Amino acid sequence: MKLGVFLTLFRRHSLEDALAYVSKQGIQTVEIATGGYVGNHHLRPADVLGNPNEIARIKELLERHELTISALSRHGNPLHPNPAVAEQHQRDFEQTIQLAGELGVETVVNFSGCPGESDTSQRPVWVTCPWPNDFSDIAAWQWEAKVLPYWERMGRYIRDHGVKAAVEPHPGFVVYNTETALRLCEAAGKRSASTSTRATCSGRAWIRWRPSSPCSREFTISMPKTRRFIRTITR
Image (cartoon, rainbow, N blue to C red; front, top):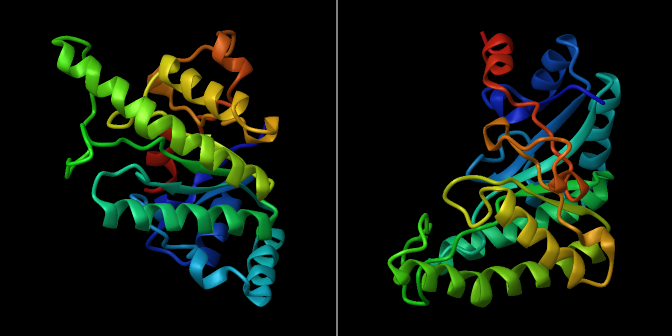
C-alpha cells in the first residue's frame, strides 16, 4: 500500500513544485488531473501527447522526487446532453487514455457520466427516486440508450490502449453507490473482449463500502483524499 494524494489540491503551484512538496510530506504516489471539472493545471494531454521530450521531463521529475503516478484523473461527463460539453469531455478522456499509455500509467479516472431525460434535454438529469413512474422510465432509458452502449464502446477503446478505467461513484452521475457501480462494472467487463477493460472504482469514504463486501472483488477502492489529510498538508 502507498500513501497518495490528488495533486489538483496544489493547482496554484507548478508541477515541479507540487511534486517536491508532497514528496517531502512522505507521499509516495500522486493522482494528476488532466481535464474536466477538476481542470488540467499540471498536465494538459494535448500539449504532451507525441512529445517525447515532455514525456521524459515528467518521468524525470517523478524519479527525482521518488514518486509514481497512481492515476490520471479526468473527471467529466461524456454523456452530457449538451453536445459541445460531451464532445469536449470525450476528447479529453480519449487523450488522457492515450497519455496514460505513453507515461506508463495503468489507471485513468473518470465519472460515469449522466445523460438528460431524453434526446432533447439540455442539462443532465440525476434520478433519485423510482416513483412516480416517470423517474423509473427516465433511469431505464438513460442506462439502456446511453450509459451501457457508451461504456461498452469505451471498454474496447480502453482495452486497445492497455489501461484500466476507474469510475468514481459520485452524486449527480449514474454511478453513485455500490449497486450502480456493480452494474456498470459488469457491463464493462463481461461485454468486452478482455478482462483488462473491467472498470475499477476509486471510491470515497462517504460511500461506506466495506473491504469485505461483494464489490471488493470488482473494485480497487482508494481513499487518499480525506478532508483531514487535505487540511493538514494545505495549511
